Amino acid sequence: MPMNSQLQDLNDIRNAVRDVCKKYDGNYWRSLEKEGKYPEEFVTEMTALGWLSALIPSEYGGGGMSVTEASVILEEINRSGGDSAACHAQMYIMGVILRHGNSFQKQKYLPGIAAGDTRLQAFAVTEPDAGSETTRIQTTAKRSGDKYIINGQKIWISRVAQSDLMLLLARTTPYEELENKTEGLSVFVVDMRTAGTQIEVRPIDMTFNRHTNQLFFDNLEVPAENLIGEEGKGFRYIIDSWNAERILIAAEAIGDAKFFIDKASEYASSRIVFGRPIGANQGVQLPIAQAYAHTEAADLMRFDAAGKFDRGERCGAEANMAKFLAANAAWEAGNACLNTFGGYGFAKEYDIERKFRETRLFITAPVNNNLILAYIGQNVLKMPRSY
Ligand SMILES: Cc1cc2nc3c(=O)[nH]c(=O)nc-3n(C[C@H](O)[C@H](O)[C@H](O)COP(=O)(O)OP(=O)(O)OC[C@H]3O[C@@H](n4cnc5c(N)ncnc54)[C@H](O)[C@@H]3O)c2cc1C
Image 1 (cartoon, protein in one colour):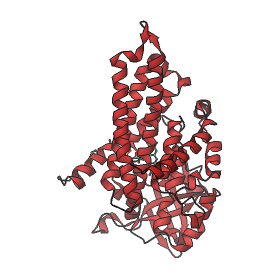
Image 2 (tube, rainbow, N blue to C red):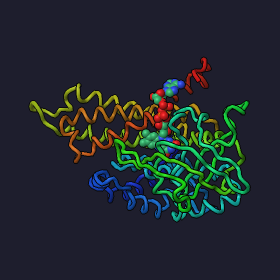
Image 3 (cartoon, rainbow, N blue to C red):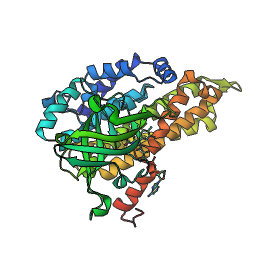
Image 4 (cartoon, rainbow, N blue to C red):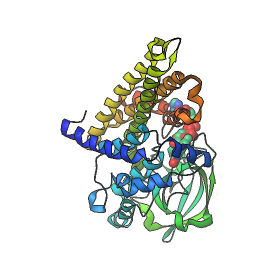
């Protein structure tokens, strides 16, 4: 857990983010969902206040914060009943440029992202025929003079229409020619403002108000100077970004879990049926208490992982376990909350069914909890590999 002085700083962040979130209540998020709109006003205000550039070093105009601090920002958005998904990506995707870009690329992109003039909140990795097996992606990037020509397709790519820039993972060496199957993939910055019709964007109608798409690339030209790092090392670069992402996702799930637990415990204490508060019945009370215990345990793992990440220590196991535990705790808390509210839980005005749908995603994406267990089984416990 953080030390006392750090806890004070984290509390200051919590209070400041809560103040912003108060202006964007359940009505705001519900009306967006009704119209399928992006939370433009909320993202603009969070950006202007510098919260979304938290992880960009101060030399590029960002907040220079730790992952521990950044995770608290996202947690508070969800705890307030908002949806952190619109903020999460702008915060961390730039990490690939920060860690692996050259100095020209960092100077070109990071100050604009920090100032909020440039939105980089789309990262195109997943493909229909590869799914979780990223090393099998088939979208190609072929070098032609001072350009790469991109062809192929992606699926489930979020916030494309809301981004000026998108990171793209594409194949630069055919799979069959590789000895090491984790090589041969490369990361590019794609400027969506100039991509034109060479990228077709087809929105996918989803369970929740996420702006997720199928993408088709038809001879898209990307300048060779937009290649991040070395050609063929792209998979390594995205793996490097996974630990930070998992810690942030864990914090977001914990924010959801706390939202559900607050709502459920308040309602269980005030709703009278059979002449007493429903929370006096153990069938109602104990599932909420159990979800709370699991949330607190997940939170300890989240702070352990974040602390190790910030100190530059190895944290793959902890980051994965934090995401796994937090996603499960949030789903458990969501179920307990929905049960507590009875029929009212399904009425949109209580925001519980909306958050219930949103929180379920954490078990599935950005990485499925199954694959986290496989990682723990294979890499931590050294059991035989399933893939
Ligand atoms: C709302 C949403 C937004 C998304 N945004 C993005 C985005 O912006 N960019 C992006 O690149 N991707 C994005 N994704 C994709 C997401 O990361 C993928 O859904 C995820 O990687 C899994 O791929 P898949 O859906 O093809 O599942 P599959 O790989 O087909 O897996 C299906 C099921 O099989 C299980 N499974 C597969 N292999 C194993 C194994 N070896 N052991 C145990 N179980 C296994 C999985 O755990 C899962 O339960 C998004 C997805 C959603 C739903």
